[in-house]
Length: 227
Image 1 (cartoon, helix red, strand yellow):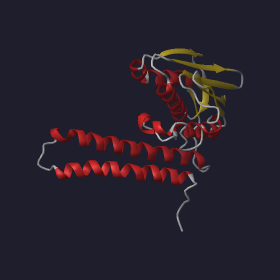
Image 2 (image 1 turned 60 degrees about the vertical axis):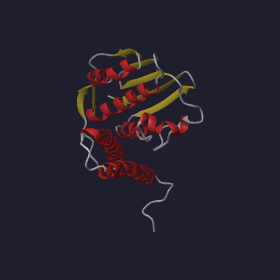
Image 3 (image 1 turned 90 degrees about the vertical axis):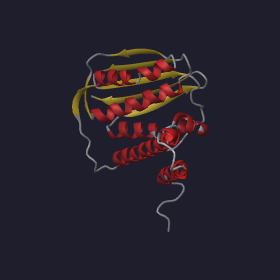
Image 4 (image 1 turned 120 degrees about the vertical axis):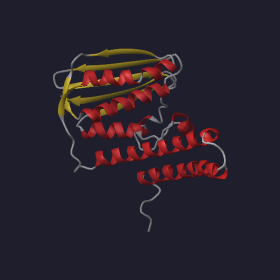
């Protein structure tokens, strides 16, 4: 009897990892076939192996993140922290990627907003959504980011110009391993887990997340969280 069926998310993770092994092995075999060559002359194959193992490690870490969020016995650490500063930290980490694509960033972030939650998980969500926006923003496109605070909750929103999300794909956009455009898996170096992780974290922390889009215009993600 199989450990899991092909319809389960676990099968998706197994299938992706299984597909990575032949690429790593093929490059390793090339190195073995040219043992007399110097390391410098074989650097291309070593780089291919590193890319493959890095992708495999990221996939495994993503699957572990999902498993933790879905395990109700896993303890969430909630402490007061400045979420405004956390957002600025993520922006700084993404500056080089935005510069490469000549992306215009517009920010409206309320200063010194304090929230009691898990700072590392919240920063993970912000990073996932920001990376997603940068990947799918067109060249010389635009990203709008905002953080607003009310009496009882905060609202974070990020919107990017570009291809957007097709209407039929919106209901599935947070599904594990779902790719609206499967042909872009290699191009964008992902497997469709990021948005699933973001949703799992926000919901585990007691919040809500949603997506909206107009095809060929923009895509936007918004989440709310209680103070």
